[in-house]
Amino acid sequence: MDKKRIENAIQSLLEALGVGLKQKDIVATSKRVAQMYEEILSGQFKDPKKELEVILEQKHDEIILLKDIPLYSICEHHLLPFIGKAHVAYIPDNRITGLSKIARVVEILSRRLQVQERLTTQIADVIMEKLKPKGVMVIIEAEHLCMSMRGVKKPGTITTTSVVRGVFRVNQKTRQEALSLIYK
Ligand SMILES: [Zn+2]
Image 1 (tube, rainbow, N blue to C red):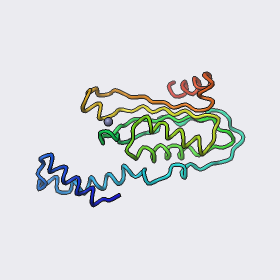
Image 2: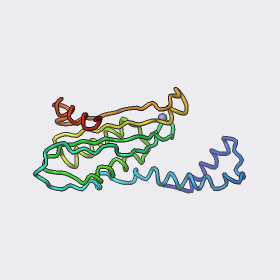
Image 3: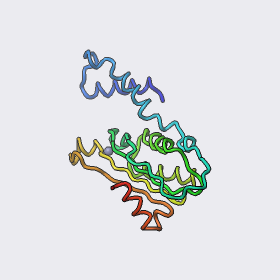
Image 4: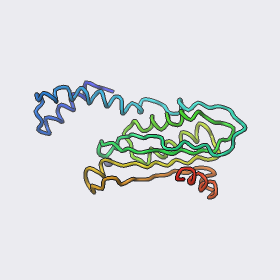
């Protein structure tokens, strides 16, 4: 990431917005923002598949659910955050992973310019590809500041997206079981 260019761009933006760059509290803003982007968009330089360590484990073939994973991402249409939580359920097929690794995949994919639908799909894809489970279900619930602060201005509106693969897709009972674990 070219931090110097981000810094310059933020300065131009502030000028274009009519903000005096000499104001005491704003002098270091462009530097801070550049620093911040490096952190909150760091996921684009990381490969989530590399984080998803595979552990061979034959005994477990029930639903493994990681619920309420905190999620912070940036909407690529408005460069404003969307904030919420992700729920990830999968049924392993002799391959599992550490729960923290699933949270890490969510984090890496969130720290990019995103749209919620694509983020949901990407999380499911990474888990399908790497763990080859019998099925995976990913649900994201998030508030988009671009909807709360502007446009339709509906604060508190939660957008829910879900992606189901494998047995969660074909077997309604399994899907229902996962849903009742998430929303109990
Ligand atoms: Zn947006």
